[in-house]
Image (cartoon, rainbow, N blue to C red; front, side):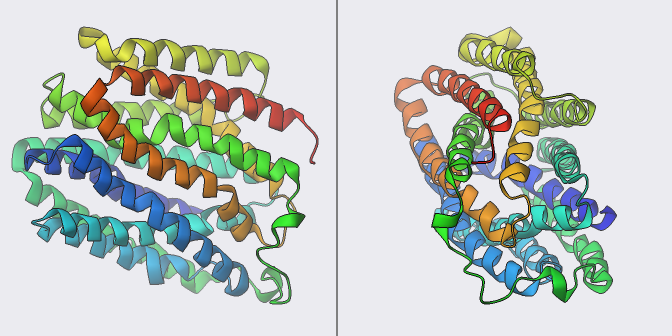
Length: 377
């Protein structure tokens, strides 16, 4: 698990840096919000297709080599493309390559965690997400401070260096070969037998969609641009704000691993999300407080997310493919939401998008509780 967590940390240190850097770099080059949304929407769309293909491949041949052969070079080359990009099409190419590296990570990460920690897979998977948020926090802080003091080029150079280091734990994981042939499925097993999944499986896929609608456009597009354009925050402040957001989300995730999923938890996290999202657009002085409240709600909610996935993929042979299928509605939601979010915010203001985020998170929380309390089918 240590090698998996090391890959997660490095991978999402780079991701956290790029999440902050790319929209701000495009904004710096006078690209409007709607066009930035188009660039960002490419990633979830490509991710949707590539991840499912790689998941099927992983279930057939094993997961260990994916990190070294796809995730490592994909991370390096996508960051390099951003470093030399001088036009919007070049940034689109960067997002396509970034989607491939993200697909290779998510196609196998939960399969790897479930394989290495079969008796505590829900907790270990949630712990991996906490490490992910901690690394995103570090990447965001480094990027914000780097852009503020040294500019975009040096900051992207730092991210390129971090991308190269991923090869170290990835190669060690290759050598370890924890997965043997008995853990791979027979080629006779139908990978995409949709009818065998059951109603609860597809209900979970539907539930995950609302988490995506609540989080993806907000964190990846709207909030960094809102801080820069509407609040006048400099890049260093934005980076530190994102660092605090992810540190809080990670801390809450770690500290609530042993807390059960009940009505009280749903009420608390939904109330926090609704209050913060309704006040966010007109907060001004109190913006950072509300922003960090969203991190608290997200830290509470991710446990539901991971527990649902673990529940409906339990004892399945095609774990990687099943997890990929669960995320299809979610990735479609990411693509469409980040595509329309830029246009809506640019034409109607940020209020509608912020409020809808809180509402979607509440729907996700309620449906998650129902799923975890219901039977398997």
